[in-house]
Amino acid sequence: MRLEFLGTGTSTGVPVIGCQCETCQSTDRRDNRLRASVIWSVNGYNILVDPGPDLRIQLLRARATRIDCILVTHQHYDHVGGLDDVRGLNFSMGQSINVYAEPIVASAFRHNLSYIFAENKYPGVPEITLSEIDATSSFFPCEGLEIIPIRVFHGKLPIVGFRIGNWAYITDASSIPEESMKALQNLDVLVLNALRIEPHPSHFSLSESLSIVNELSPKRTYFTHASHHMPLQAVVERTLPDGVRIAYDCLVIEE
Image 1 (cartoon, rainbow, N blue to C red):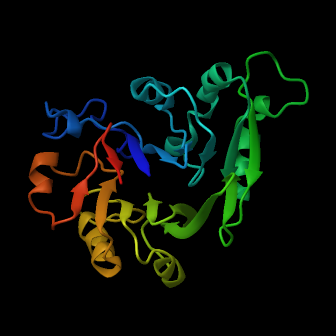
Image 2: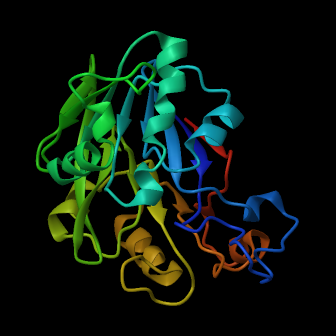
């Protein structure tokens, strides 16, 4: 199992345009964050989670040439705004890419990117096959690969995280229902959002994320989706317990 963090920032990215705060002006590359996305590699398959608006530069930076499927956590632009850029992968792979999302997200794709789904497409549009998933049922996007959706809430919006084997990826959550907490037991790796120190109405703060970690006790945890209100990487990491880190762009974790 391998996970590469393509981006670890919130919707604005870090640095934020026009901001002069300490985090935005940091010279530590770990404080420079594109929008949250990962490539999850398992059993020889490469799975992209969330094609955000920085996707083109992220895939170039990762030297990615093949994505076997795309999983989408929810329909907010910072998690879907780069779907058009998968056409580069279509060209290199010579095939369509399967995209898995809940019905409300699939509907947003069909509305906002209607040209992709037109009956008479113009040449060069992205080639995707959109499949709707049920948050209560696992699915198999590739042979022998089971993906378990995990229902979480982003404020009042129901969204999904994903579990593959004993690894799980949760972003943009502000609450996790009891049944989902049960589905997150016995993890080797947990990736979880932690926006900032102060509370936020639709994202976990650092202390809230640490409480989730304390309850689940995964072997390793990596916090993602950080804003520029999160202190410097080097400062925050010194405060974290053993087995917990702040993820940063281009970080690769493996087992």
